[in-house]
Amino acid sequence: MNIFSPLLLSLSSHLDTFRISNFYGLKKVPMQKVQILLISIIATFTTFISISMGEFISKLLLKEIIIPFGCTLLIFIGIYFFVEHVRLLRKSRNEDTSYYVENNSRFNSLLKEGDFSEFHYSNHVNLKDNLSLAIFLSKTNILLGLIAGLLNTNMPISLFFNFTISILMILLGKYITKFSFSNWTIKNFYILSGILLIFWGIYEYLL
Image 1 (cartoon, rainbow, N blue to C red):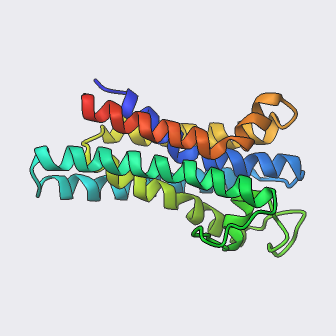
Image 2 (image 1 turned 90 degrees about the vertical axis):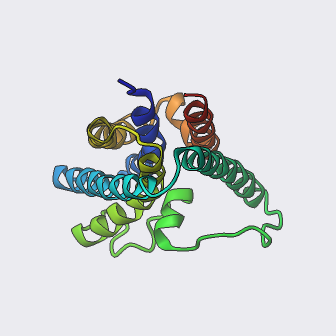
């Protein structure tokens, strides 16, 4: 039984959850248990839907085509994360980044910079904003879950890892803000995501 691919899927899907949760901790923005469960449930549900869609599509195509295609997508997304790391690094140095594609949504600002200013209340996130945040975080799950379905990744194990790791990432992000590991993860978030995705793509191709 291959548990490595579901584990890589869940870890790469929830690094952004860890990052945002870490910002919650640094800004001392409280998060209720129901909000944590809401994020985890929505993330797991979207993973279920996307894996199901990927499995359906994979049945329509030859394995000789779909496996290299899925692996190439993972590697391509991993490279994109490296490019995004360079963009943010250059932006922090006040260099020109106008030729990069940038998402300026309020949740993307929260993900990249920990900016809570566009929420209704900067000192806490209400249930409505939390629901929107959960949906935003699930975007990564949709794309990666779809690829996982194409690659026939074990769904029950993927859903179990997805739910438990999402909760774990939220708790870790909020409560280890003072540790150097947390700071390193925040600074190198996109590099770490890129490495996981590229490794996953190569692993699946060689499997």
